[in-house]
Length: 369
Image 1: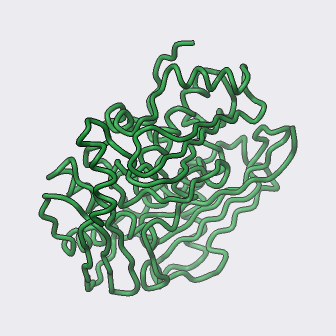
Image 2: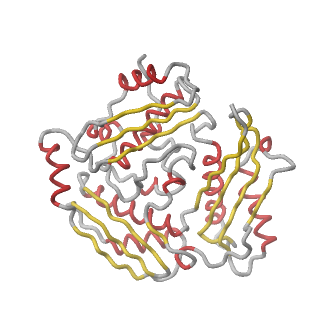
Image 3: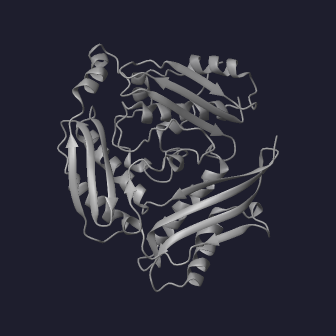
């Protein structure tokens, strides 16, 4: 039991890294829409009015990469004209053989080696840590406020950050909220602050978490007119901490966006979250973290670990036994149980991959123990 501050950040869809995640996952969705067995790892990089799309694709789908990129950027809210260069090759025959050899025997091998983590805790209705829960909530609201007004003074690029104070490991209050938003040139900082406080922060944060000492930092750098790819460069997969647990749960290092579900960086991380959430939802622990590891081409994991940080109602060894009785970490089962070979991934590319009940890895099931 200890006292501390913990901070997490989120970003809106207009951030240059998130532009690239959305392009990558929109490409993946189009591939899966036409060919559910597509093997995809096609990423994007953006700077100013230039987009580079590159990677590997083994698919029968006919994909207009350039048009998907342009449509995605326009949907986000940028009206500039972009040049798009495409450099996409077929997946290495050696990697493809390692993965498909198992499929030919009726199993699905992991698309790569690696370690994946999943995390859940009882700090919010979504079983997500409070700092990232509130940071995502603010970022979604920031985008909602912008899109609801065709003449909004807000721009597509933005960041949020929330510092939560814990006392004896339980949420006590929110210490600091930071919101940085792109805006029209004619907007004053006073107008922006009033809008953010009234229409973004107030609807998202429970009054009991705010006190006289809570700090609100709205556009602390001052003017933020130039944003998106004209204010910074962007690349797929650079916001993995925003995409997961805001730093409170460990991450394996591999990003999610662009990767088809045979890539365990994505699918096994989703399954680990699924398992961890069910352990917490069933009252077996207040916090739960799952780690799994795979070897390329092999269907079964090489290791599985559970950590409940001393919050379990049973020992970690007993909880691991419950997990093994109720969950199957073989790659083929993950794809089947979570129904992952569908064009669902563009929806995951903003505001975190975890916590949204529309996704199969967020469902709570009955456990036998």
